[in-house]
Length: 258
Length: 247
Image (tube, rainbow over all chains, first blue to last red; front, side, top):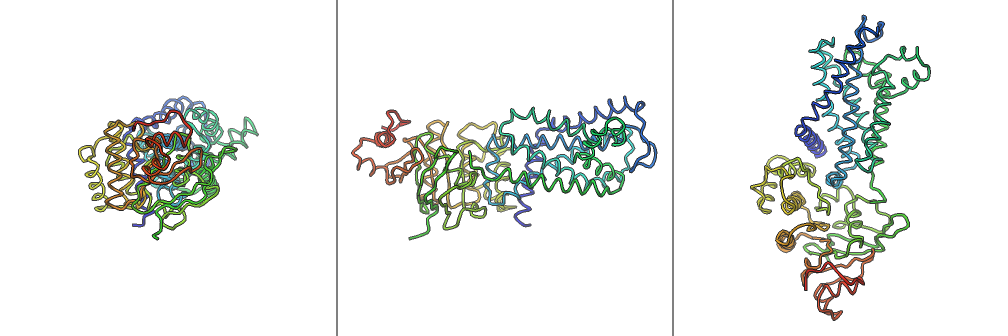
């Protein structure tokens, strides 16, 4: 096995070990989307009617509509959690161990990012299983079809978190990130409402939601769950992931200051 | 003359307008135990930041065993940072295994090296304990064991004994001296604690970013007609009180 893969394995293994030792993190990550699914979606089920829009072939209930958005929410919050853990690692010094190993910075950070994606995928499958048991109509094959989509959306959102972590110097500054990044990104997207609904109420909000890369991530997941490829959103997600990762690597280059 | 383990030439570094290192040049030979002595704020951590590529080199040159400092060259380097860098929630063995894998060690070789280092640092009994449960001295032992897992040829230690009690400090100083003496490991030991310096140690005195003196501790003291290294250190750095614990 090439050394690069040994390094990737080690970093993923460490992240999974830490995740296992912080099991409350797993349950915490599930509670948020489950409350949205069970409480919020059930409440709005009667109020919100959704017409037949791809990838759905018939009328769907609201809980079916928001499930991909909640998958995106898990990955978005995981990306931020990962970002927080990067800042923590930097403050606690363990990031130095990684950055002084004999490998290219870009590969080390990519490994760190992929490790976070693996953790997010574990969380997503836990959520999808509970959602399926709750009665959300997701084909069992959708669990397999969605896997590649989860990887690219995970990289997009993880890279966004990594980029933010390169700007944030202290853990204390993270509350602002949650308020000014996570909530607008989530609410101004197609996670909770389809674009045409948004267009009915506000044209400029429609455009904000349409250009939000998180919308592309959610639509990629939505189509993948039903075995379809949403090419344009998938390409936007991939391109966004590449750009954000490149910027994050740039942000982590050795600095001129301590 | 053999290639030095570490060659630093004309290294300078600025933080904005403040000059933290000013034309520092230094060599460490294979098997040499070199003390980088300097008070707090002398520029030791900046120098270590540059040696470990955590800071970008602004001017000057650094070579490890004749190679320009680069990612592959880091394979020959072991580092113990001033700040603790262990993963507190992982066990001793898991910390070592993670580091070993980062350096490409796998399977039985990895296990054998971990066993050997744990044995050498008298940590075998603690291998399954979470680092969070260890005292400061044992954590430092784990960090030294970790820094040696990939068999580096140069070991950098930045204030490795800060916060430890005397027996733990003595153990670490003696252990690292032995590594240099018996295994030919080149060592750059940064400290501000004069009692860690032995009369026959080769020292380099760093103060306000400049290398003020270099030589064998006992000889430097005698040449300056000082009663002790502490007195010499105070005179060189212009300080009335030092961190001296050594008469």
